[in-house]
Length: 273
Image (spheres, rainbow, N blue to C red):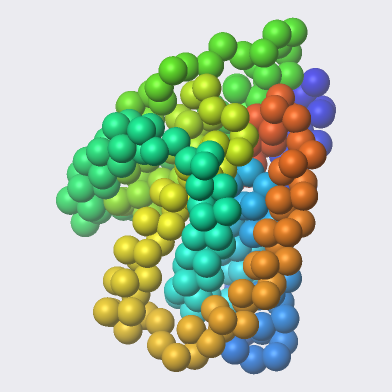
């Protein structure tokens, strides 16, 4: 059983850049070679995203760091993610858990984000990020082992653990990577896979819209960056088609196992980044 989990986590960790960035990486995303590499990374990352509802940004940034400066590709990726998440939320709007978002996710995550932003000046250290990554890795592997060992479906909760949702906000305020604790919290709730994906799409759209506004106001993205994002739209359209095809063909138990495995790989990316 452990070998099976290692066999699942290892390829995902490699996809998420567990090998770390190559020193001296300095390709520009608006050159022919640079755009081709970024397009391949984007396709892989958003295929995973369209399948399970998360992991596109952390995976694309972790792998992309082997060729690009993260500050060069983060704003275009955030911009194109808005298109993907808007489409997923709009296409599957009937599956969005609006009461859950309004009562259990946005208030608690928002409060945590305020605390995280307030503490970011002294708490947002690489060591803190790695400790957080180790914690998420341990939790994700524990839940994956439980799921593999269980002879019956796991008992799910009526509402997400508020402590995890609050922690997601704190981590997002500190490192802009609050996805893992939020995904873990929502994966513990009685949501089918379609509702989980559609609900997460609303959260990512709201968060990334705020980021894009900040990037634009601060000059982090210009006409070149928006041109790169526009060129990536057809790539993400293909990724959404492939990911949606895979999403429809994964049963509920395997879907949850994939969620925990990708969470573990995300944690590895946080640890080694």
